[in-house]
Amino acid sequence: MNKKVILLISLVLVLGGVLLWGCRNTEDIGQYIPAEVPVTVDGDRELEAIGRKIMECARQNNFSRLERYFDMSPADREIARLERQCDPVKDQLDLLAVHAQLLQDGKWQTYTLEKNSSVRILRVMTADDIPLSITLAKRKNGYRIVSVKLG
Image (cartoon, rainbow, N blue to C red; front, side, top):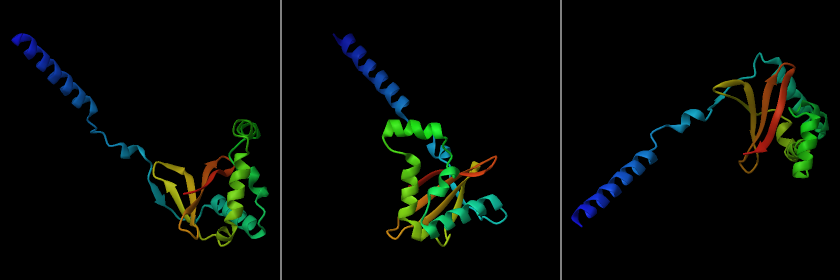
């Protein structure tokens, strides 16, 4: 009986030690999250050009001309339309139209990702202190709009 109790206690201790060793979290996952770095648009003609187009559309409150600058093919849009029952590009353009007044001045802050300099984020604060972010990706033929979102 005594040997069984000792064996059972040692088995519980070994399993507890293995469980504690397996659950320890020593790796810093923050190294995998890209940091945003502020940049200037000086000298980046392509970024200035798409910024002017966004401001021009905001002044006219007509964002339909920006559809061709989205980084989503017509086939991908159609698939998204069938899956979600809505067009993601139209939804993002509607979000831009809601905040057109903020985009008219072009007083947004420009950021890039620390480990991916081909991504630019144009950010402006709304009246209720929620950032409106326009994410752009540089392609062969200029910048393409990847997403427009609040937050």
